[in-house]
Length: 462
Image (cartoon, rainbow, N blue to C red; front, side, top):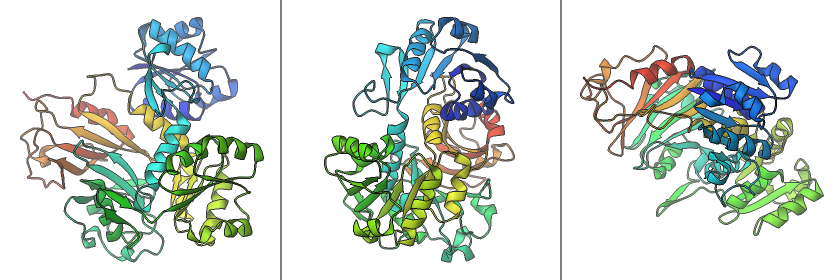
């Protein structure tokens, strides 16, 4: 596709780099000379100018573009440029920071009034992503891969885990759960080739329902006997959550959690605390630095289920989480500006490190494909600290692989099928199992093979 991206900030740059890796033709618009330098080494056309200018958009080729992505830091520029792009017959996607423009309680929605086919609020998307993890056991990350309830989850094996002396075959998982892949030292490998587990391994497990996450948690000894299933809900043992940073992400996160958890939101800035109090109904807002031992003890950090640092400083978030861990908090979560630092944060003992830039970019990238252009493949996730992707392939009746053995599917050398979701269940296919219509293949692949994967699964049966 021919795609125009306006704004080369953190989110825009992440989107541009991924689009180029996937083989799209990309043009960028940016009026900041310093940011323009970020794309000097990339294979694309760059236009210096105002994205809300018709002249600039025409110069970028808006009349021939398939998709326009407005990712500048200014909502008004993103909206005006999207209006123009839509008038030119282009599909539009925009980053909209202010909730004043968004449909109530929506993180991603269509804004027909402004000609935006998909508007995404970064702070709200990030807060929702974090809340979803905090309401699941062991702070696992999850992505839905089937309407029947199938999920792919990932988590980091903690330091000094007793499992580091065994292979994947030594893990007893219940029916409906399957280890699909292991990310280690910047590479993603199949469980069969990974050998023994190591400290810091990021493990990907496919489960047929979210209730099975508790069983996975216990099998990997992440938090034995902490999580339980009560009816259709999970109790995670994280009844009290402490959040450091009364910025937009911190406030939105507190709002998402305050109805079901005791939430303490902390910030040393009085004005931010007052602003947070206007938006929260049950959460406690406390004015403190978040790195004061005595203050944290006074607020009862010893019985906190999870400590979350959402400030704008990655370094400060790191220090705060380290202190929280020292004071006895077992689960910590930190926001990281640079995705490349995620593995470093996790290596020093922070349970989960998240990049708002990557969360927002991934949220937008999932909606890139034209309707009908790539009917079978869908990108589920971008893996930080390496160049791998998780792809879901939905096997339609007309796809050429239907009726063939899995061993006959020749994937690129750096790609493998981690698991298959069939009829709501999860399986690891052998070479001789037969592919059926309706199967969902969970494939791990390097970015250099994305075009090959797409091409492979666009072929129909003869």
